[in-house]
Image (cartoon, rainbow, N blue to C red; front, side, top):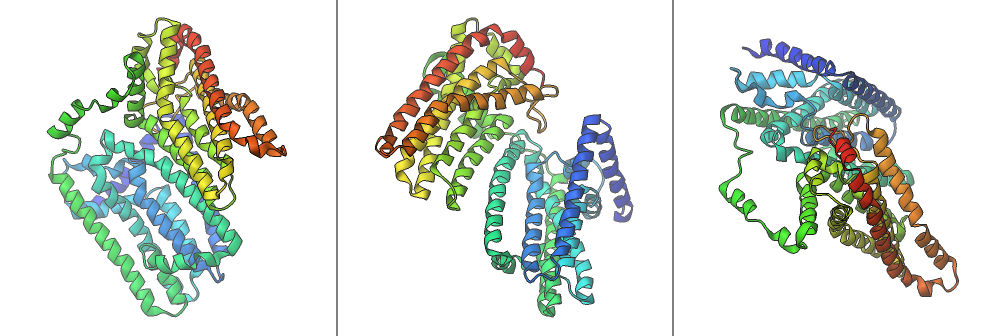
Length: 530
């Protein structure tokens, strides 16, 4: 089949996949329509904002980095959301008699159908309007928009084709857990950059714009700006860079398609050495206590490492717990007390302990026949969490203190962090038994349908309870800070907060154990819904 005949078929295929996907459920249709409306509204607002930049001295320094970031987003999208577009998986076509080059053209054209390309088109059009001056610049702008859009789409396709064997495997889907880390870091970087720009003006972006104007797809927009300034030679070079990048991406994409169509899939088959190493790996168990405690701790730690949903929650908490205090300290606006954010984010992992087991909780339930069994189970889960949270909270606190140079406040911050961690372990153990909910194993939802209210009560109710439990330590810290002689006794907050947190944890586990033993059938029913 020729490329001309193949392209309409793939466009209809893309529309059919979209239409049939929306027919699966009303919730999915509502979510898609809502996301589309918000995406298009945001695109329209961006378009208006970029048009408003027209004539500004630093307009190019804004739009060129924006297009570069847009291209980066297209590059990482297949890695973080491999199931977001079924047509990203060309292995579904391996049994069809299709040649790579016509297939590349057809897939590239079909990829232009969707909300993402439309959003990109709006941003690119606004960028051209912002920097173009004169008829020649607008004429080049038309070419630039087409080139930049094709580069973005081809980049996403090339990345997906290069990693499709990995992305469609179980281990490959774990890459999606990095999305929380990237979003957290990206949000703080944007926040930091916005504050710098607000204080110093758009001129702060000039050095970045000067570099990124030579990086495709931003180089296409840089060519429009160059024509507006009369630098036609520079414009030709920048357009050539974008065109060359497009040709290179299409060649890479075609080569990977050929390989996918002609080679077997061995990405999910472990080597003999790997399998032998996994069978003989007993290092973790050797370091843990004997008996049920060590077994439960090992199981919990393996969930953190192997279960995608659990890993995603931990990666996000570890990242945000570090980023918030460190970025604020870096900007000079933070406080050592911001380090308590790390303990708070990690303490959330104690909530809904049984929901993390999902339907596998029935195997745990069969081993719990008394309050003592429930207590040992909860205590071991808390120990496993403490193995990570205690050193991590201490590390973040020391790092934040070092960046601020406020060493006298280190004992106070550590004491408050440990007290908060203990309070969250206590309330987390109790809410795990009182308000359990299921975490679906497939998709990106973290709460099973119909259990959203339980999740809100469990997490936010527990956090409010933890804050109230920490009130005595917070009051002591405030009193020491306002007292004339408080600085001489501020170090007492470290042992006091540590002891108080330990007492709260022990009390919370003792209170949660009998409720867990009594409510095993209800807990099993709640966590198995996903």
